[in-house]
Image (cartoon, rainbow over all chains, first blue to last red):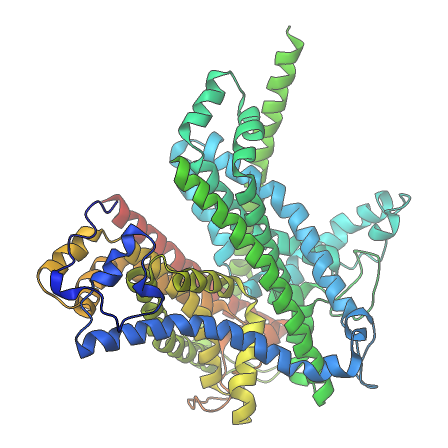
Length: 347
Length: 280
């Protein structure tokens, strides 16, 4: 891309000894410009300082968020120790706080969301890259992406006023009768058909993360080298066989990355879950019962937290959420970066 | 009839139907949500919405103070967040490029881009609200800016990296210093990408509710003081929708319609505009 990238370096602007730092050591041909820039002028130095400062600020923000959550939640961690994570108590009056119910609710709703979103997203990506008429691909893709643009509070209102009653009258009685009576998994599906609860929150979250997974999946499906597709076609593979034996194996790590990205979103999603989860601090096996999640507990209770310990417990919840999403999103990013490198090599 | 061929064709047909059904599934929910918002919101839409304050339970009223507060905080977020994001993006694309620092910043920026907004709101609470000892529009604007920055960093970095190196070579060959090359040549060339990124970021922060719950809080009355709790559309919608009062519910739907229409219109305009630019 930059065959003569070094040519603009005039002889009098060679990098001086007083210009150390990471950007002074280009490890790639396209970095030549960073050293090519004349750096004598005051304005130039100020410009560099400001832009580099802004870049450092991004790093500092992340560290500052982690530090402020850890220090804000310190009182709760110190008071309850490991019990904060393993206890199901959430007794505001007696000052007993445990995170297990919220952690459990966060995980169960996110898992349900992925169970719904992953196959649907891959189906959408397959439809958009192989099946749909070419003229319809862009409009459908934009419509699916608009699902991500709808504010989450709108999902919450729709979930509370329309979707939860719909489930309560049309779906949950059926679930009770047919799945609730099964051995082993029965307890998961029995409970009052009130519409608000873990299952509803999981479905709403699933719809919310579909566009994130689907758009990454579509992009990587499109990036599969034409030669691979063509050889599969030449062997007589059907569309399904092309997906199953060529596209999915080739894009596996990106798809896993996209799923982690969706998981990260689902774990931290707040408003929609706050509306439909029911804010109940009880541990229940049933997916039809109201529950709680970390984000929903903070949104519901933070402004009412009147004691130091109460507030600290909620910030400690936020610290746990931040930690988990940081790990999940890092994994997502690593998986996606690996594919970018691979695609860069083969294309 | 060849059984193997039949089975393969059957599986292919099932995959076809499954993929189409999945797409339909997504689209049905989009239209269901939009229709719900439209049908409930239109019924409550009237002139009072933009002429009166948020009412107490049972009374008539509008959303004037909430719309105003939201606008103020979004503008505040743009004013604070865009320059920071643009500077960091410029560093990544022009100075940092493929260095370790740039890689680390891009990595962290992508994490911030997807980080739970409620945690970022709590961070501003600890950073601004606790020392100032009161909720304020400034804190709300800063929380939104914190969400806007990673969006602008990412899009400006990508837009600047798309500018061909020949343009840099030409500018340097004319003897321009680096900062002038960036400000007068590269920003110009990357302008549509940068504007697209900022507008998409604005669409995103306009609907953010969680980080405002404990930064701007809310205000029942007219207030133009950004150093005091400030009414804003998302939190009003949240409180009114969660309340047991019918009049509040219908106001919440009207607010939801205004918000959704604004966010989706911004998204569609940006996407169509960006597509036309790129196909030229």
